[in-house]
Length: 64
Image 1 (cartoon, rainbow, N blue to C red):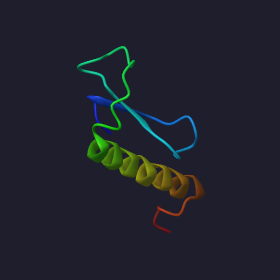
Image 2: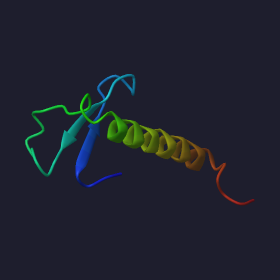
Image 3: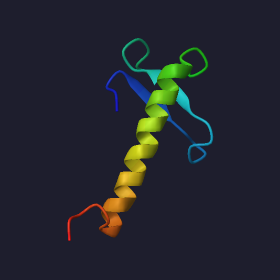
Image 4: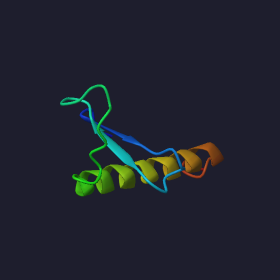
C-alpha cells in the first residue's frame, strides 16, 4: 500500500474512492476520477493482498 494515498470502497471493491493524505488529510476530496492509474494500481495491490490473506488463513501458502 501507499502512505500518501488512501483507497476506500464501501461496496466490497465494486467502486473505489482515492484520497491524497498529503495534500488533503481530511479525506474530503475523492480524486479517483482524476488519478485512475493510481486507483487501479492500489486496487490491484489490495485484491492481491486479500487473496494472499485468504490463502494464509487456509494454510495454502505454507510448505507442507
